Length: 367
Image 1 (cartoon, helix red, strand yellow):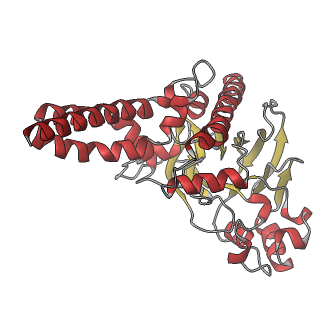
Image 2 (image 1 turned 135 degrees about the horizontal axis):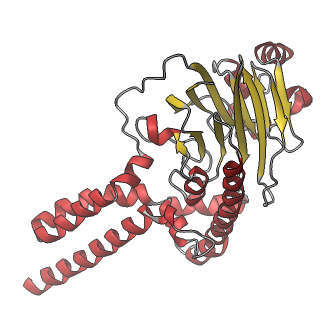
Image 3 (image 1 turned 180 degrees about the vertical axis):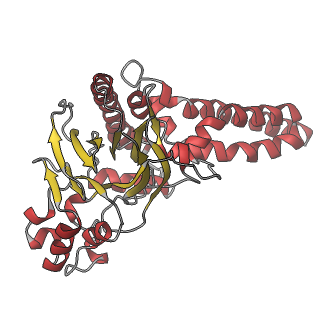
């Protein structure tokens, strides 16, 4: 009996050490370039919340088995607290905007071409996505995967003529490229030159707004998609249900390889975007869109550089998700601001019929 307990204790020690190592790799995976090193750290970063939540459980068990291991678990949590706060910001106090600043609300929204992500859940007589935009209160809407809705047929968008009239009245200034990056604005706007980023589904457009005499520039981006097909998504669902039999090899060949390819592409795209920001001396700059990547990822850190900040990390409260289909419950829609801009609120809105939720930020700009 004593020998069995000792074997069980050593087994627990081994599992605990593995969990601590995995927590560190996941916490700092966003600092490691998936181009220079294999994309495993970037993939591991997606699992960080699970490892971090496991740490206090291991700490409690370790307290009764070996207090030294409990100290190791607590130390791990403390050393990884910054990664935790990136996933789960704890900003309990409101931010005071600068005196004389101009407040505007900016929405970023991947609209899935204005189609419902689950057609059986939504009526075809009404566009829930366009309704979400109309009722959002946003002054500027940055759209990914959606040309201007008035250019779509009624069959594709489900929009009623009343909805389109209302949208055009609220946002008289509307600009779109041919790939689905567009903006709806209450203020005059024009699309300016932007560098081309590589990738089959990567896109970047830069829009210049005149906010009652205050210039504002927004980089509207859509980074490379993972390219999952229906079979990949079904496999992921099977794995989340614990149906791992005969799926480990498939998951490596299908899911992990596609994730690694996308993360490497994100890194290249981010470097090009960062280079464009380095050359841009505008004071009021916002960058938002569908990153197809999580908070604290390498692409986000690269784009942030020294002069931008992550709006969620700075003023949000609690964890959030912005993607809701196929059990990929991740926060992949991000917003960054140049440090001359003050963000006082940001949150995802659980509205619309897209597979993404829109994110809405309240920002304050000055001349």
